[in-house]
Length: 395
Image (cartoon, rainbow, N blue to C red):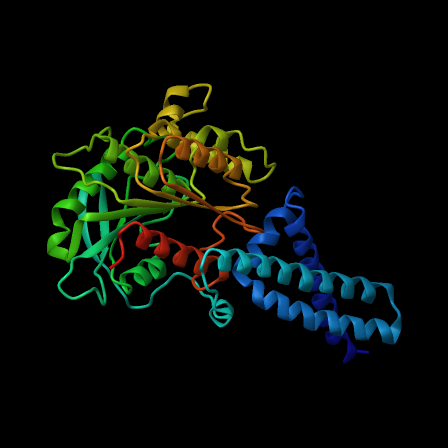
């Protein structure tokens, strides 16, 4: 009896895990289901290949047990494990198909070994470009590796996300290093982070303008070409990157410092908050709360209180024909940033004469690409790399 007790616990835990994975897979196909609709895509993005393999093993194990004892619970676990296997595998195959349709090759071995964004001992060069409210605002610099001999490297600048009030300029170190290893002078800009008692909507973009001024003035001595500069960012960072790029090219960005702004040659935005007001009114019952918290912290209040502020930080406000070519990568199951807002923005940008490309990733949630080497991460890296090359920004 005592010897069987631990094995029963292990079988019970295995059954619970397999059942939960099956429910998460259901969430892939029913994103409106609270929790499951969010957890399913997140699990697939971070551990999809392993879930498919382990769920298949679990389905076989539970199926064998059901054939032996004909217990209903074993049948239910086998069915849910099979659901996890088929659902997760189908979702990943659809994502790989989308990648292939956009000339992106997915390495499944790399996806199996996907890891976090840390880059070990690799330490970027850091300078302080400004101070705001007693806070130093740094730029991390990753010098190009393997750039063409005798040619200055194109510059690829990253603006981090985090709802305008969290994360740091080093949250994508593996991605930043990946682009520097392909010949880009990579920079990552910090900006003042909003808090509940310190909204930063009116200082962030002018300060990022200072960072652009610094990048243009110092690029040559770092091996970069200030005439070939692109920006990218995700989520709130995508909002900031679009806004400062569009404003810089239109001559409406007013840096909080003296100096000349560069012309931006291209921009890539991953699930950007192009419409903060729509983010505030996000109908998602759980994640929508975070959208309201982020926007009110950044602006100091609600859209009803400060409609002018929301208009000013909305990316559509800054659309002009002078805007650079724009790549938008949008996860179709995003619960934090409503995908339809990006679709509408892409239409407005195209109508204004901007070269805008919209890539939609099925079964993907917000931040689906953060795990280095995952299917989503490989897709984003290579799609951005190809877009830069198309627009004259190849090393």
